[in-house]
Length: 117
Image (cartoon, rainbow, N blue to C red; front, side):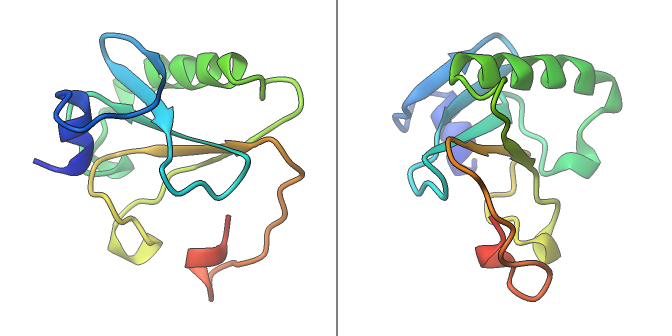
């Protein structure tokens, strides 16, 4: 069981932003921007490549609702999902980073993925 599964199960607390039967959004404990939300499916999927395509519509709608909830829908935001070891994915549970609240710069790139937010 990964850390996100434990958050879904209520074994680890989180600062929830939005939740429904399928998805959960909560504040990242190590934010890279003034607003940094993690968005996950409640069911465990290791990464984007393994997530059923037919579920993406519901996930996209949920992500849009999260953006509205935190007030980023009008000013803009960055949405990131790392897929697999070489991408820098650290928790092997599909998750999206929703970042905003400032004018985000792209400073890292392929040579420095840890700083690419």
